[in-house]
Image 1: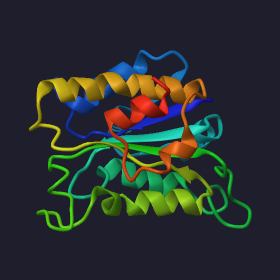
Image 2: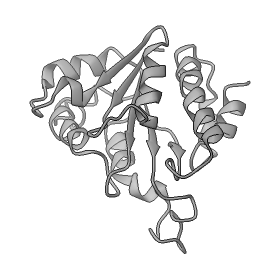
Image 3: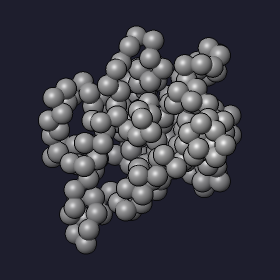
Image 4: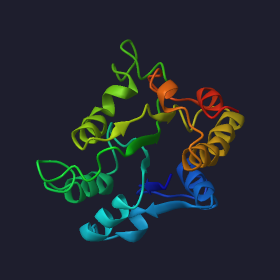
Length: 200
């Protein structure tokens, strides 16, 4: 399958986990990586180009760090402008129907922080509901998100495992070696989950 990574990070630093993930993704043959902040520094999104790019891919990956419980601003603007009525939804739309959508997100808070009894009072899945519902409205298959919690507060080995698993995930999607049915039995996807889903 053809995989498109839409990478959105407004504050990229050399030690950024998301930047390291995007760099690994760029090394995977056949994977398209679009750095939205690099392509649209003035937020002037080329809607026709983005729609053409969507049409030529089967899996759309939204990769970003969670910012104030939401996507970075440019990714939200991308959704607002690109997923137009008549293209992504509506009687004459549905041009994305049947494609897969996958969110790859990092958070500052831990899994416990993202729980009913944690500081954020809700699981990460609930904060991603707008992306889930948008994907479903477009007729897309919304996969459980691949999440790294407490990204800047956990052991380096766990961070590295997450970064190294990312290109393997993209490769499995590209080569159609990913168990989509089994994936849907998970609320979120971790490195351990992906090892099983990729048959590794």
